[in-house]
Length: 300
Image 1 (cartoon, rainbow, N blue to C red):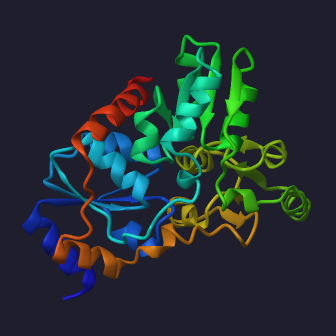
Image 2 (image 1 turned 120 degrees about the vertical axis):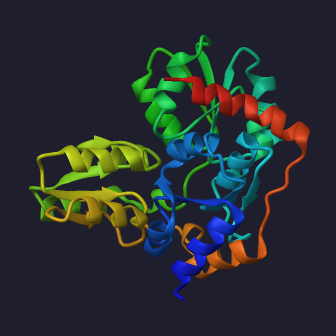
């Protein structure tokens, strides 16, 4: 019996579903029941009817699934799969921001801990950050933790004052403007598709800026057949499968998230076999954090 067959058998026995982020290894994406970006995974997690959710991603994603489904068993196959950006803001930092700007709303990027979400007014993802900020009645917004996504939002919503926290994605920050300019010169017929977690000077070079899911949709619908991709390399699995006649080139060879790549198909099997590693959060924390997630999901 193959690993894939064993996983399929265990899913049925334990009434489990496998959710995977787009940045996961291709073999993990292939075995998953649903693959998406943070917003798509949040919406999918909310609708899960199975008893067990195996979340192939990083810890904050599994935490969000547990917060949205407190009665489900949520498993993170690799316990050390974390997110450095999420570690760049904690509850106390948000409390300090509020004390300095008491009239501001706190918008917390979903790439954050449950504790940070609990101190925030509303969450957002890279897919809906602009919509979330526009939906708020406050004119002043504290945006945590990603200063690059916050800068992108500020450019799109100039009528609001955006106060930035000094956090960033270590992968997207590796994309240098010189690299994308050279890529554009080498591939003059290609369009540059950029994630808004990249620095503003890279974003300014883009033909299109969007989340991983938005980049995938743009590439699929575009009449162009060559693209330079400025986000984590895991996106190539879907891009190439959906668009076999199109060419995709990475903007940089450094776009690898080691945390997203910690999960292998063997870890998924072990997680189901041994029911590990279960996400456990205090009920009071989940209740508070869910408010910000529910508000995000209510934004259309």
